[in-house]
Length: 109
Length: 113
Image 1 (cartoon, rainbow over the protein chains, first blue to last red):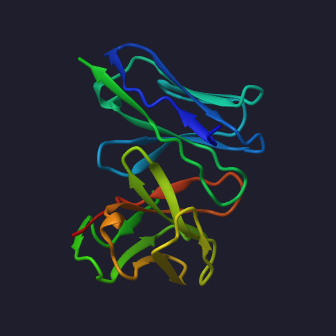
Image 2 (cartoon, each protein chain N blue to C red; image 1 turned 90 degrees about the vertical axis):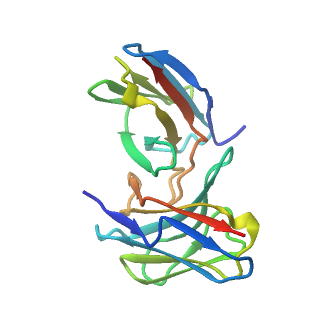
């Protein structure tokens, strides 16, 4: 099993839709989790941090399920500008980050 | 806002050349990282540093070396560039601690011909 797994997509959704991505991880010792957003040919930018059961920021909600070892990202009322690749990151408790390969989202007009 | 800058956005080098990529952060972060990103492979850690003059190998250190003489600056060196080192190189910095977040520079797209 990979340390961090994401569905590569693409997820094609219409504007205004709600979309959710999951990310599964294998290291049960991980304490913190992150979602990054990466636009084409740009650097990853921190979107949300998840330290306990979940986090919400406007249209974005991240949830953590430790029993099943996955984190999810929910985007409500999708905008065209949400089109990007979303990277799940699971630090295993050391300095290192373990990145998923990302889920590509396309929001269609 | 955290600012991480990289010396070049685009670089073209010839096989066998020595290549220096420099990264500077302005947030007094202890940790700094060098990644490369390739289609289908995601981000892979090359080296990281948790203090001045300290370095640790990441997952793919072969063909690379690093230098951290000052806290704010972390350099990646390709001693003899090869075509398989053509990639996007991303620098990141983050503070110490279990719940740290990493912040990325804009990246350097290196092409080795």
